[in-house]
Image (cartoon, rainbow, N blue to C red; front, side, top):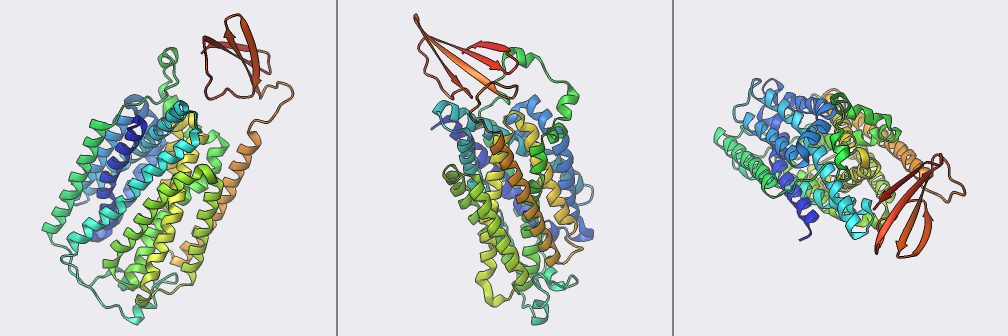
Amino acid sequence: MERNLKNVLVISFGFLLLFTAYGGLQSLQSSLHSEEGLGVASLSVIYAALIFSSMFLPPILIKKLGCKWTIAGSMCCYIAFSLGNFYASWYTLIPTSVILGLGGAPLWSAKCTYLTIAGNSYAEKAGKNGKDIINQYFGVFFLVFQSSGVWGNLISSLIFGQSSNKVEISEEDLACCGAYDCMTNDATNTTGSAGPSKSLIYTLLGIYTASGVLAVLLIVIFLDQIKSDQAETEREITKTPSFWSTFLATFQQLKDKRQCLLIPLTMYSGFEQGFLAGDYTKTYVTCALGIHYVGFVMICFAATNSLCSLLFGKISQFTGRKLLFAIATVTNIASIIALLLWKPHPNQLVVFFIFPALWGISDAIWQTQTNGLYGVLFEKHKEAAFANYRLWESVGFVIAFGYSTFLQVYIKLYILLAVLVVSMVMYGVVEYTEAKSSPGTPTTPTAEKVWIVVALLRGRECFCEITEQCPNALKREQHTDIMIFTGNDTMIISSA
C-alpha cells in the first residue's frame, strides 16, 4: 500500500474512533446534564477554549512535538472530557471541557498540516497537481470521519432506546414548530419519558472512553512521523524562530488579505453546523416528531456527508473548486428558503430526512474544499493558516450557540443566509485575486517576476531554456544548475 495513503487512512480512522465518542457526547450534553444548564455551559466552554487554543497553541505544539505527537496528545484531551462525564458536576465537567477545547485546535491543525504535506509529497513524486492530491486526501478523510456521526448516534440510540417512551404531540404544540417557533414551547424539551438509568449512562460512557483510547493507540502505533517543513535545510533548522514569532504566528497570518477574505466563509462552517445540530433538531424534529427521531435524522446527515465527501474530493480535480462551491451555495440557499416556508408535521416524515441530506451534501463541500483551499493558498504557513481556520469556525459556533436561546428560528435562518452571501462574495474576491496574480507571459523581467534559467550540462553540449516557473520534475543525466534571476539582476545558483 502506498505509504502516504496508509497514513491518511490511519488518521481518518483515528478521528473516526475519537469523534464517534465526542460527537455522541456533544449531542447528549443538554439532555444528560440539564441541571442549571451544566450541559450547555460545558459546550460553550469548549468552544471558548478552542478559540483561545486556536490563537496560540497549534504552531508552538506542532513545531515542538511534530504532527504525529500533537495529534496523539490532543486526542488525550478528548478522553479527559469523556471521563469528566462519569461524575458530571461544575467541578469536573467544566475543567475537562477547558482541556478538550485547548486540545481541539492543535488536533485539527496538525491533521490538516499532515494531510497537506502528505499530498504535496505524493504529488511531487508522481508528477501530479498538488492541490488535486490534497483534495483527494481530504475527501478520503472526511468520508471516514463524517461517518462518526452515524456510529455515535447509533450507539446512543441503541443503548438509551431501551428505556425511551414515545409521546403524542398535540396540534397546538405543532403550531409552534418550525421557523416561527414559540420560544416558550415546552414540547421541544420533553419526551414524556424518564431519563436513562445510571447503569445505561455508565455503559455508554465506558464505550465512548474505550473508543477514544483506541484512537490514541492507533495513532501512536501506526502513524509515521512527518516533519512540519520537509524542505528545510540543516542550516535553516538551526535558525529557530523566536518564541514570540511562533506565539504570534496565528495573528501574523491575518496580514495576508486572502486569509481575512476567507474569514466569513470559515465562520459560515460553524454557523451552518450549529444550526443543524442545535436548531433544526430541536424546533423541527424534536418539536414535531419527538426526541427519539433526532438520532435517525443525524444519521441521515452523517451518511450523506460521508459519501459526498469522498465524491467531491475525487471530482474536484475535474470540476474545480469554484463549481463545487456554487453547488453548495445553491443547495444551502434553497434549503434555507424551504425551511422558512415549511410547517413541519408528523405526516410529512420523509421531508424531515430530506433537509439533513441536502445539508450533508453542502457541508461535504464546505469541509473538503475549504480545507483544501487553505492547504493550497497557504502552503508556506500551513500551521498558522489551519489554526485560523479552527479559530474562525469556532467563532461561528460560539455566535450560533450564543444567540440560540434568544432569537426565533426564522431570524437565525436570515442570519445564515446573509453570512452565506457575504462568504461567497469574499470568496469570489479571493479567486479573482489568485487568477489575476497567476503567471502570464512577461516580455521583460520585473521585480515581481522570477526568471529561471535551467542549464542542462551533457558532456560538452549545453543548452538553456527559459521558463516562468520551475518544472515539477526534470529528467537529469549528469548535472543540473538552476540559476534564478530577479528584476534586480541578482542571481542565485543552486546545484540540484
